[in-house]
Length: 114
Image 1 (cartoon, rainbow, N blue to C red):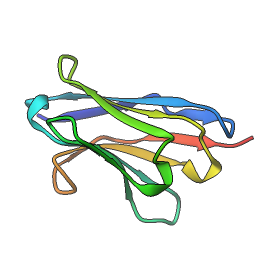
Image 2 (cartoon, rainbow, N blue to C red):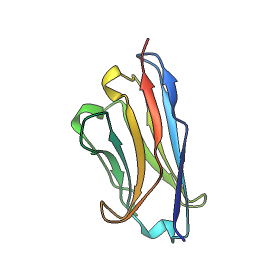
Image 3 (spheres, helix red, strand yellow):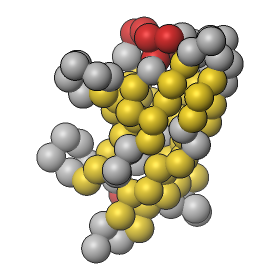
């Protein structure tokens, strides 16, 4: 049974930082491309950042230079370091394995507000 369990969300002031983690089980983690998506109220789910099995990364334009995706294959975990957070980053953040038709976590809420 595949499980993706996110953690690290919360409430942060504008300009602050958070690090999200996603622990995977039930898959050979090192073989999978991993990604973080987010969904704000009333909006579609959107790709935030992705990392291939080989470590190649890509980001949506609005988070470039502020967010960093990384993975630790020994720990079966993918991370999203988020710096200089903005109110527009407020959303539920979801961990994903193997693309939109792959596996999803339950989501973790990130709220950026003063």
